[in-house]
Image 1 (spheres, protein in one colour):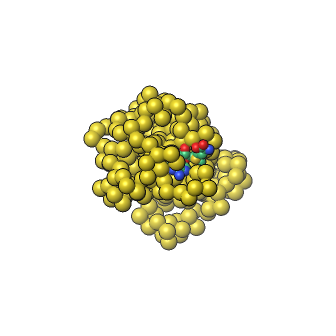
Image 2: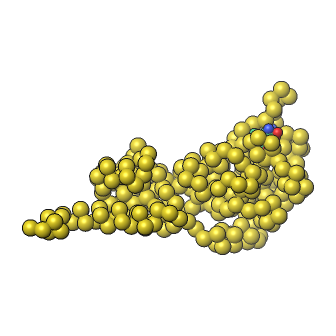
Image 3: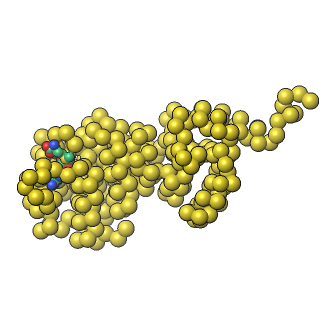
Length: 262
Ligand SMILES: C[S@@+](CC[C@H](N)C(=O)[O-])C[C@H]1O[C@@H](n2cnc3c(N)ncnc32)[C@H](O)[C@@H]1O
């Protein structure tokens, strides 16, 4: 028997999947773990390859936590040995699941961000520095049904660490990097401790909600573009809140006072 004859069908599909992974890895979005894959499936990401070290366990997890995507996951996942998973993903997620998704086209995202009338806000992070914060904000924006998350500056909002922090929810909202001059239409409400108290304001559904950098707050360019400066209640001796928690409070305020229905 030659080497090929000795292979089981699983060996063949395992080898095929590794080849596909290596061809696609550059330029694809790594979905790290069960929850990232689950969210990406729910929000119609295209997923050309998905692997796990224990397909049965993955399907059982879906049965328990996400029966709506169980059949899709069962169809997508190929079982590979642990060593193969480690070769594809340097630090495999505890659920031993990883997949590659096709990044949505920038043109499609820009079209979503520019479309008017807009029924939910766009969140702008002005030159954010912390990848974990950016991921947490994308997760918040997805949860509140925001139209998108735009970043200015050098941070890549599709960096693998941001995608990991976003739990696969980059596919639930339009995530792009733009300059301040390219911000989507809508009144700009920029969050700053010196602004007007948010509790007296109703944030419109087409608001552009802008937040400053962790280090230096709002940039001069964003301040110049702002229609309103808005503050979150904070006692005097506290300097500022964390960026992601500021976004959470602001989106919650919008949802409680606007016509939002997540
Ligand atoms: C960590 S803070 C920035 C702190 C920075 N050292 C500064 O000088 O502003 C990040 C962003 O969260 C928002 N933020 C934090 N606390 C806020 C507050 N009390 N009111 C309004 N926005 C706030 C602002 O948009 C701020 O630029």
